[in-house]
Length: 83
Image (cartoon, rainbow, N blue to C red; front, side, top):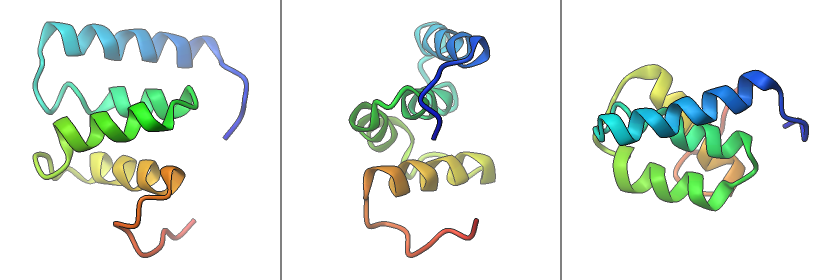
């Protein structure tokens, strides 16, 4: 991952926080852990994912983001990712 933040990353992070406050459903939580991962906050990302998303949503894009979070945090739930 890159260590610099773009304006789009900052805006996405802010929007994901607002979305969670406005509608605290598993669907609204899908972008927040991914945004934390982009911010290099791996622990927060994994905690939010386990608490609000894991086992509740089965959309492919969300599952792919979950796999990326697991890969970055060293979680042993996934065997391998093809890149």
